[in-house]
Length: 331
Image 1 (cartoon, rainbow, N blue to C red):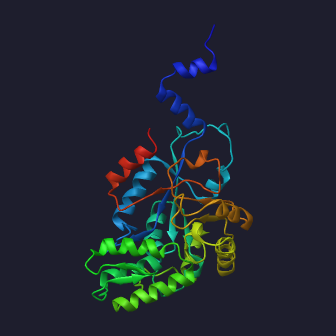
Image 2 (image 1 turned 135 degrees about the vertical axis):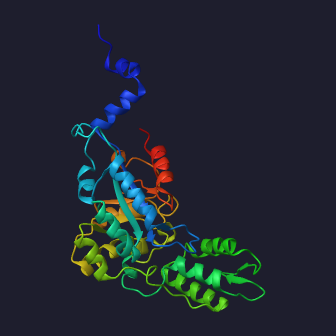
Image 3 (image 1 turned 90 degrees about the vertical axis):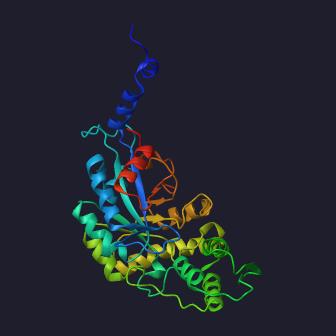
């Protein structure tokens, strides 16, 4: 008498079971990048990946995985494990995404994507499109690292940050205070800190936000545009009405700006403490087809399409990137 299905699964080698699962439903990993630049300078938040390393990442992914575009990704959401046997041995599917909406995504990442036949989603902060001002975390970095506070140090919200504190620690402390603020309070806090440090913040050609024309060039190359809220606030710290405005307003803004459908959202910061069920409900009500967080997992098997997992990518060499990917998705 042949063994039961459950017994067969128990007796089968683990590698064989994994291979079968992959052929039935290959894993899908979503990668989260922020910036791609020719050379990396100061980068306290570790958002930058060099163009050389990004090209190595894509070359390795193209050889080891199957790069998919947003349309294919959206099409597979909700499909069961028996949707169809993969004819390529079940190679992992990989979707590339970019958060925030930096101009360098179009200037430096897009040519590398095109060269490798890859598509990606650029999640743009709608209120920053076309702005000449630095994103708020970059402005704070400039203030702390270039500023000269008084002998009493930095002051914000009745909290004093000693002047002799190392810049990295001062930045972390101030970032923690600024993070939960609404956009207006945040702007006022940054203006106050800039005045304390005697600094005028600015965005250069590469760190500036993307323009409307650049978004359209991105879309014309076959890539997608998604939303990243209006002002990049920590959603979990905002009022209910503000959460709705940030999420639904960003979709309306970008659709009006580009004339394109905006189907996807990425939550700012994206960890479990940065968004909540209110944000997920607002994303669903606004008409997004899915929304992304920043936590580990196989997006194909995610039960909640409004909190899909992504893996954050840093400035790793091609070899280190490959090694990390293999821990995320073992063969």
